[in-house]
Length: 242
Ligand SMILES: NC(=O)c1ccc[n+]([C@@H]2O[C@H](COP(=O)([O-])OP(=O)(O)OC[C@H]3O[C@@H](n4cnc5c(N)ncnc54)[C@H](OP(=O)(O)O)[C@@H]3O)[C@@H](O)[C@H]2O)c1
Image 1 (tube, rainbow, N blue to C red):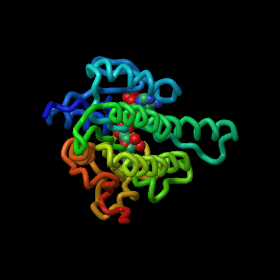
Image 2 (image 1 turned 180 degrees about the vertical axis):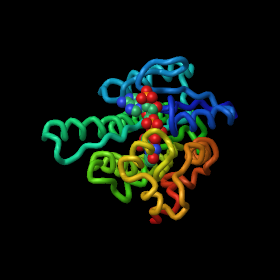
Image 3 (image 1 turned 120 degrees about the vertical axis):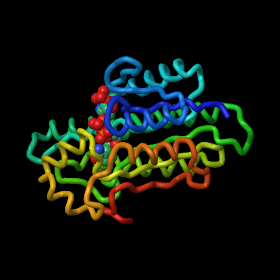
C-alpha cells in the first residue's frame, strides 16, 4: 500500500503537532496547517468562511491530487463570561463555532466528496476522518465555555453522521474525546480553574499528554479496523466514564 497522505489541521503546536509528528514517524506524508503561513505549514485562519476551501485546495495541490486522511484537530478555547455585552458574547459564540465546528464540517464535506469521486474496489477503504472532539462534548464545560462544549458536542454528532452515511462507500470516521491535555490550551484552563485542585477530579492523577492523544489518532488514521467506524474514544484519566 502507498504511504498515506494526511492533512492535520492545527498542527503547529500542542496535540496537532504531536499527531503530525507521530504520523510522519509512521511513514505518512503529512500536510501541516496553522492559522498563519510558516515553514512547511499552510496558513488558513479558519475563522474566515472561505478558509477551509482554500486550505483543502492547497493541500490537494501539495498532495498531488490525493488526500487519504483528514484529521480535524484545529480548535480554540477562549473564555466567554456571561457578563460580557450581548454582541461580544454572540461574537465569541460565532467564532468558536466557526473554528471548532463549521470549519471541520466544511473540510469533512470536501474530503467525503473527494473520496466518493475516487476509484476503488467495492470493499476498499477510500478515506478516513479523525475528529479531535473533547470530553466537554459529553460532559459539558465551565460556565465560560458554553460555545466550546456546544461545538464539541456538534462535532461528535457530525462524526457519527458521517460514519453512518458513508461506511458502505469505504469512508470511515473516528472521534477522540480528550480530557485535559498538557498543552498551552490546558495550561491556561488549569490555571484559571484553580490548578492542582482540578487534578483531584482525575482518578489517574494527571492530565493527558499530547503524545497519548497522538498515539490514539495515529491508530485511527492508519490502523483502526473498518468495523470501528463511528466510535468515540475517550482519553480522560477516568474523569468522565460514559
Ligand atoms: N488541550 C486540551 O486540554 C484539550 C482537551 C480536549 C480537546 N482538545 C482539542 O484538541 C485540539 C487541539 O488542542 P490543543 O490543546 O493542542 O490546542 P493549542 O495548543 O492551542 O493548538 C491549537 C492549534 O489549532 C490552530 N488554530 C487555532 N485557531 C485557529 C484558527 N482560527 N485557524 C487556524 N488554526 C487555528 C493553532 O494554530 P496557530 O498555532 O497558527 O494558532 C494550533 O495549531 C482542539 O480541537 C481542542 O479543542 C484539547
